[in-house]
Length: 420
Image (tube, rainbow, N blue to C red; front, top):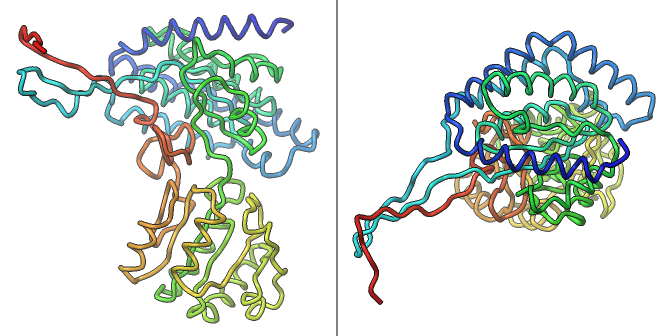
């Protein structure tokens, strides 16, 4: 493709036209499209795995980092999860057109707010092919058109998924441009998309820190994003030991290359000598390298001395920073200083401390007695997520249907006129 600029302008114009139709699409029509996507992906299961094998081989040959290769894999389990995600979105209540807070004013008019689509959403993402169908299904359900720009490493997988989506969208009578996969791997397409503020209403980047920093720097369009997933688990002195071990191990090892994996473990000094030796053994069995503070090293001599940089590190792999803290105050201070406002958890049977933790930890998701790996849209009942936001305006945490909508005021009357 020689003229990326013209191509992206065409994509933007068509998406804007499609968005006007999508905003008025019935729930039944959207449901037909979503059910069709799920069925089409099931039929295309063999093609999906073949395409993904090509992507995986190319990624390995190009020396792609292992966390990105892990995110790229699309096996039967992954396909089943994508299908389940689409069907879960289909079952969610349709938010579009819902009128809330309707009330009479002294003048006799009724004032309320109606939920409406954002319009056109641009999603820029790396590696994970499941993002293609997650983003498409959420945008369809919320009445938005979307422009999907996946990474070159997943291009073959994304093409098959996009073909399933296009077939189903057209079969439901919706415009083809309601979901558009950018069909060039030229990186200039990203820059062009970020300048389409006439046609695109919001950008959602999903990928590494470099991608998100670039999008935030260059975009002329509002961005829903998070940069790092520096997630913490704090084990309080009143924690149940078995529960604490299970949560701390799962938070780190269930999956390393995800933004909700724990990167720093904080342990109250009152329970440290009880729980840390058990955790050291479990982490050792899993191949996790521990980097500890001085008080941690006194309990786990085999740990590597931690550095100041480790507290702000998103490892996305089998490395964990560990700090023994005096108690809750020091834990909260550490999280609010070094965390990325993504996901942080406390393990404790002390109600007052858990309440303080929930209130004072300034993160998008704050968890009590549960693994950080639950912090995603599917587990939160959103069906799927288009991304996770650590911003404080519009959307925060996993972004599902409601995060892809806005509200407008609607006013009903019976001939009222205003006299000043």
